[in-house]
Length: 289
Image (cartoon, rainbow, N blue to C red; front, side, top):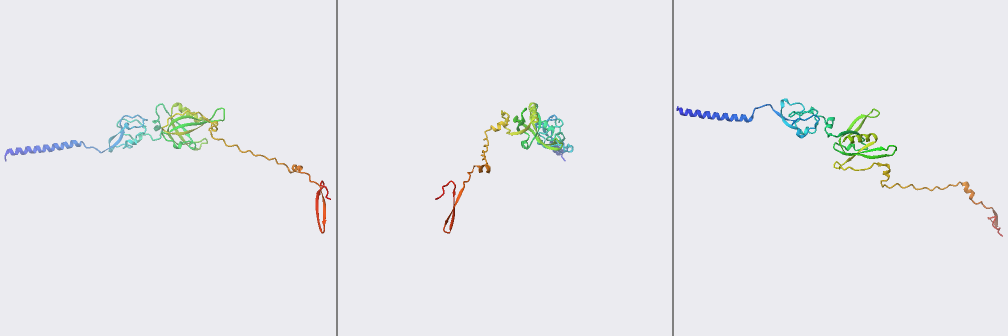
């Protein structure tokens, strides 16, 4: 065998094997190291303090190994937006169900209160009010009906205007006799001063909510309405009842006294053949000839 051909064959074999090895190495590098299967869950995108309501930029989706997936994770970001945190979260920490307050709980309500404002709850009478139409975000005016000190004259006055409702619902509490009673409680977002006015109004009279358009922010200046204002509203007064003439009834005895006394008569018998007749003449009349 020619040594030259052997060398060429070996060189080609080495080049071919080297090319194949290079291609396999490149494929393996592109795939990367293989690991356990993962799933995407909601985690904190940054450090979030307790009591905060989660916003869109507070959370993100991260890959998490399925074999060590914590209990109570969320797969969708929209499922946690607006929920209040009971415990603080660190960056990349999974958001768990146990970390979030239940909707309607005290913690969820507190995160809705801006700094400097107060949440003030009062009872509402659904029979005379609009409690059944109140929802979070509704705007109302608060009217108070009370008695003027020193008199028995009632009046109604608008004490608060364009107030935001942050919650409305029913609660069971004991009545004065100790029996369970279902009442409607409305929580309003107020300044500290307006909170004092609302509590004073509810203790001194009967308050009622007046629902208004959410885009109507006008503050109306109106004085209190009294009973005298109702009759002066321009409504026609009812007509007076017709007078009834009373006839004087006279007794028969008095009427009998006024009747003329009957005159005395004398009778004349007239005989014409077999016929007889009588004629009566008053005594004052001249006798017939």
